[in-house]
Structures are given as C-alpha cells and as structure tokens.
Length: 471
Image (cartoon, rainbow, N blue to C red; front, side, top):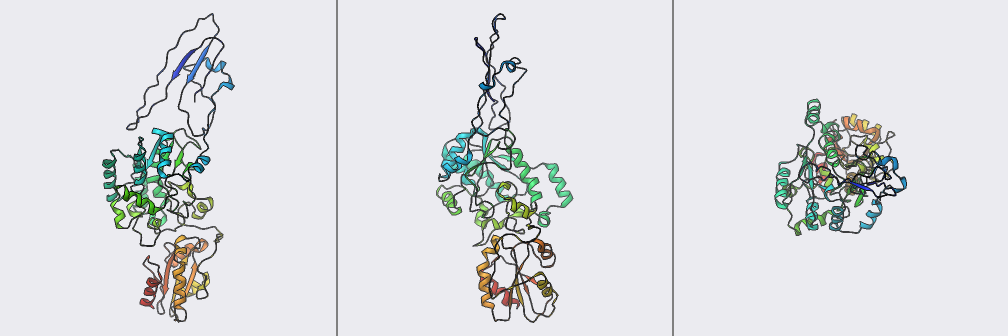
C-alpha cells in the first residue's frame, strides 16, 4: 500500500517499485530504491516516504498502512493519519450491471485491461476455447491455465497441444498433489466416485490445484454460461467478487471472477467457433458437449441437457465439481450433504411442487412400493418412475411419461410414481436399483425382481417399446 509522510522542511525521498512477475516464470525482480540525501543534523527532521505499489481494484482485508521499520524507522513516529492514501474500492456489482448487455469481446477486453498480467483464463479443453479466441481478438496479452487431473481423455490432451500451436501460447498446467492422489487411490481405489460421489476425487484432483493457481492471481476468467446448468448457473453475473476462492492479496474479496459468456446461448457459442474457424476438441463430434475427466464424462443423446453427460450416476441438481461451488445456494448445499449425491432435507420434503400428476397414474407410498416388491405373482405389470420433483431431468421427461400413462390406461399395465429422494433415498438405492434420477422400473407379472429401464431415451415411443417387450 502506498503512503506518504511529510514535514515542513525539505524532504528526502525513498521510492520502491513493485515486484514484477513474469508471465513465463515465477521469478521476481528485486526492488529498486531511489536516492537518499542526508539531512543536516541541525535542521528539523524531514522525511518523505513514498512506497508506490499498484493500486488494487479489489477491496483489501485491511486498509491500514504497513510500515517497513528496516527502511524508514523514523517515518512511523511522524506519520499523520489523515495523509494516508485512500484506497478506491470498485463496486463490481455495479460493473456487472453496466456490462450486462455487453458482448463477450467487450467484457474480455475490460477484464484484460483492468488486471493485465494478474488475470488468467481457465481453460478446460471444451467449448471454452471461445475465451481464448476472444482474448486474442482484443489484441492484449493474456495468460491461460488448465487443470490436468491425470484422468482426462487422450483427445483432450491432444487438443491442448493443438491450442498451444494455433495461438502461439503456453498453457500453464496445474497438477494435483501426488501424495494426496496416492492416498486416495490406495485407500478407496481408482473409481470410488461411482460409489460415494465425485466430490472427494474432484477436491483432490481439481479444487486444490485450482486454489493454488488462483493464489497467484487477482482475477480469473471462466467459460460459465447461464444455460449450462439451470439448477446452479442461471444467475451468474458477467463479473463478480469470487465467493469461494482467494487471490494474490489473500482474504475475502481478494479475487475477481469474470464470466464473459454468461449471457450467451450455447448454440451461439458454436456459431462463433465455426465462423472463426477455431479448433475444437474432437470429442464434440462424438456427442460430448460438457467435457471433464474420462471416467466421469459421456456423450449425451439428442434432447438431453449438456450437463447430463457429467457425473451421470448422480442426482442432477448440483452438477458442479467444486470449481464453481459458489453457484450453489445454501439449500442446495444442505440438500446434497456435501457429497453431491442429493441427500434431501431431513424431513424428506423440499419446498417444490410435485410432478407427474395425472388421473391415469398411481402415486405409491413407501408401503405401497414395498408391497409391490413382495408380490411374486402380480395380476398386472407395473411401470414405476423413481423421481425427485426438483430434478430437472425428471421434469424433462414429465410430458412423455404422462402421455405413456394415458396410452396404457385400460391396457392392463399400471403406471406409477414413487418419490425416492430425502428419507426414501437409501431405501430406493438398496431395494429399487436407484442410481440417479429419474430411474424407471418395470414390475412384470410373474417375476419378483423389477427390471430397470436401461436407456436414457425417455420419449414415449421408447418407453412403450420397453413395456411391450416385457409385459
């Protein structure tokens, strides 16, 4: 922080420059000090100190000046508080409002202008390649970093190399701590996330390396868009004080997060990439939209939301790995109980409207579905959806499932629903093969074990085919 002390007589000046960080290395330049002119002992003591530093646009944790007694031991004794430099704190909420209608290029330019070498683009190897293209178009220098979890697809690694050559840059890779990865794999195996949720693995392989990367920055740029995940990203602003991570200066409010594409539709991103002939990850041509680690990412089917390809074995409500944990509201965090597996409120009832409501459809209680499980010779086959009313994918299939119920009315096949979140979730996982919402089961007439619908095609024709093949 810059501060100055003056007296009534002529003053000497000590000046120090900022440490200058290089883009390609972590070396620092030594501080350079100006001249110091000795004062006549008989004259009144006069000292002027001006330690000039870059004025941070982020609100500091403490605005008090810090003296360096080894350089100016006398300065503190004659400092006048009213002369201390006033720190200007930028209102990023107001800036977000001003930039709300701006283009991604304008927002990117503003971000790079404000933070220079203290800001970097977070690049995942997916369609956020658009961020690098926008940065190039500004004509300003920029930095790019990426998290190498050690579990990425081979196509993603090859894409990283293509991007470096295309833009003439070096991506700054961050790696997980080898000891932490070793401890996790030795204690829980390579695929523990299929059993107890992805959060622990993501914390070791992604969140902690990201935390280290951001501690060297004052701002970062992400490819988040509102339409990527309606459950967690629908309200993200184009710029914000990062609610989770700390930056170079440390403390709350020390890091700014820029989301230049927050208001851009996914289709428009792809139109931009094609128009600019930007290289893209070859996985996109195989049906991958949102790309993460190889074990946790798969292609999505037509009509499915892009985030449904991520952590598909888990509930849909919080498709976040922890990098953007600040997007989750408190009730979402509580509902997921910290592991991303969708543990609902303790009373099992979230304040959301129920779905799958129809006269052609039977709502099953816990007792009702337990009785259905016990029957070995049912008079009629049943098809039952295990659902959670807050699940966006359950809502997405509501229309087709209600149409199915209408088509099967009077056919001898019963159509039911069972709410399997909250207190019923453990029971549903143990007894009803629940893996993720929605799960669809067929209870045949002459079988005690229900048959799980294996496909993710939830249109009425696909569901009818499944019923007719087994009824």
